[in-house]
Image 1: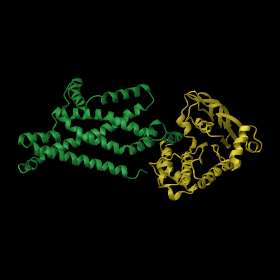
Image 2: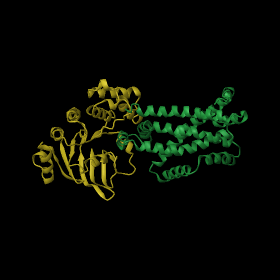
Image 3: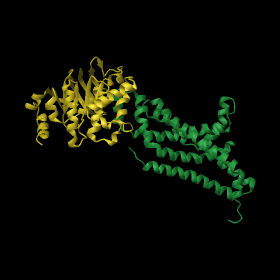
Image 4: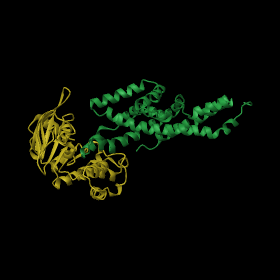
Length: 242
Length: 218
């Protein structure tokens, strides 16, 4: 469903992505990991065109993201995205956060949008908070709202950019639980994360990046069982031995 | 102050009130117009489209490098030449204030827009909203919330600046006070009174700003 083909990207002289190629099939969960600064977040932001690439092509279903004429707003409305810092709209209630794009982008009626919002918020266990503002919620609650906001658009795939990195440890699981459930329902997901427990549990493949390049791209058990590269071994030993 | 006669104020109250109304009305309209035009200029400046941003930058820098009184004269004398008929003191002054204040407001608004995190823009874009929708529903509401105190402060300055409209024969509060002072021969009383009125209005505005700054920011 998502085809990333030999993409490279530079910020000025600095190369952030170096000839990256990978894919995510329908219903697949792919975890992208690697040391910080390795280009994981940049890679995932290229998938829905939030970051432009200078070389290579990205296709999502039949749409070529990297083509100049592509209607990016239309494509983005079909791909959900969850951010490290939640990025809920602070001046709107939870309900309004979930309804805004449904109404303005998909053209749903207010009743329709509200019904969808209520159903999704109930699903993540936050019904009693629906009229509150993001600032009144904990980080874990905000991230669950952010996931619901993305799901409200009925996306064909979901992108997660370090969804638990900004959370206090005790809140990580409430967010991961929602993501695991989503994965088990068959959602196509690309997840940048350091949560290796999550990767082991639901990922079909793990992509390991270092210095802007994809170093390993393998089925999950193989990646954890017998990582090929020294850099991946080093990375795994550092984050798994704690 | 035994020789002073403050009854002159009481006797001329309706006349003074008319002047004050004109000052307040002009301030109000100029703030609204200035913010609307200033928002447009700020969006042009930040659009990333060179001709637009260059135009906005030139406009802002040009206006900010001339005195307000000159801009008022421009519109009073030049607009009738351009459209072939006089538009009257009030409208020429209003246009001048709007054009002048827009330059200052646009810089305030530009800073306000830039204070909204890039992640918020990405969040809006990621749900498929276009540039205008992101600005309209996500960026500008947050930007204005951050800017309200400084916008009000600029409004207070604008209120004081409206006293310049005497140059186009408009009877604002300051002009009316002067007229009363001279015709009644009560200069000291009237100028003290005018100062007190300006002080009260501007001080109330400042208190309002202070409350906004202390208020909840959630």
